[in-house]
Each structure stands twice: as C-alpha cells, then as structure tokens.
Image (tube, rainbow, N blue to C red; front, side, top):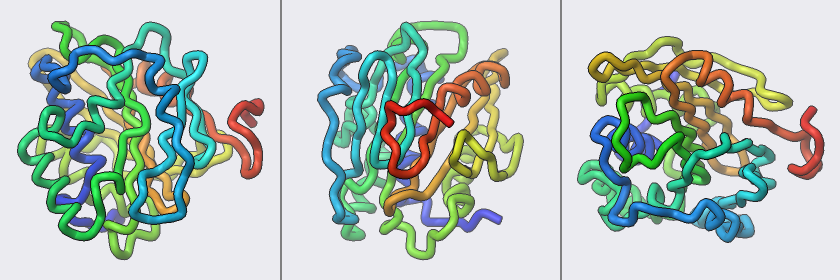
Length: 247
C-alpha cells in the first residue's frame, strides 16, 4: 500500500501540475514560448555522487532521449515539441504559486532545487497553442530520495503523487501495481480526468535508481494512445550501453 509522503516536497507532483495546468488553461509554460528541440542535446551532464546534486539530465539525439545513468531511452514521437527547460524553471514563471512554495519548502529542508529535475518534457503540440483535443505529453522526472525519509519502494511514491492528482480533479483508475517494461520492473498507477467533453488519461511509472525516484508520466486521450507511448520507453541491461538493441 502506498505510504503518504509529504506532498509539500513532491517536486514531481509540482512539475506535473504545471503540465496539466498548461493543457487545461491552454497557457504558456513560461514567458518564453519557444524552445529549440535540439537544445536538450546540450544538457548532458555527468552524474554526481552527491545526493544534493542534480541528476544526470541525459541527452536527445536523432529523435530519442537517452539517459545512461538510469539506463533507459525514449523515442520521442515525430513532430512533438520539447519544453524541458521551461518545466525546470524555478523563478516563478513556470511554476504556480503553490508549486513555487513547495520548491522553497524543499530547499529549506536542506535539499536545493537541483535535487529534483525534469529530464524530458515533450508535448504533441506547443502547450501555449489553442486546441480542443487533449495535448498528449510525456514527462520524465527524477527526484532525490533524500527528501523522502523511509522511501524504500517505488510504490510508496504514489502516496504523494495520488494525493496531488486527486486534489486537481483526477480520479484513480488503477491503484499502483508492478509492471515489467523490457528488463525493468516498475510500479504503475493510472488516472483520468474530465475536462468538458474531453477525457484525459494519465499513467505514471516509477522506479528507484541511484538515489533517485525516477517517474515516467504519459498523458493521452485514449488508453491505446497511452499504451503506444509507454511502448516507446525502453530499458537496457546493466553494464550495457543505451545504444544497444533492446532486450
């Protein structure tokens, strides 16, 4: 059963709230309305052994995001736009007042903003663009487990995540359950939210690795669309390179 962790420290929940608000309100994620898709390739950063350092941000190349430290890759759908840098903005432009307050409280606990980061945020259309359909999205984030005393299982992370999702109008479709993706066992939870005549479906997968809670959130209009997005996520065996063929 998920353990309720302090929601005020759940940076991933904050990032997801920003993404959902951008879709629901059809508002820009930040004052900057554009982000070069190729800019993520320049974000590669060597991982640090310090729990208070930023996680390995990975890189984008040839339409795929790869993170060797966490051992996975994701094939970004053709034509999707990236907003990773905007999602990581912590100056109040991208975060709501509640979200910014959560970031500040986390910093007060001795863990700076770099303890959590969005590794990839991609949308089927620019979040600032008007549209009637659900803006499908993928948000991959990593947050240091140091801010969650007692967190030993990925299923526990859903305590805070579920609380945040339901507080913003989503309902639980499936309680957290274990799911094998390639060579990796993750914990998955499914949600849905009504917005007018539309229905937004969300599935979040979580794993604990290298001192981080790594979450993969997929948003779509149908279950089939969400499953297709999950199918673009791949993991590799230990001590193999991300470029190797998936098992």
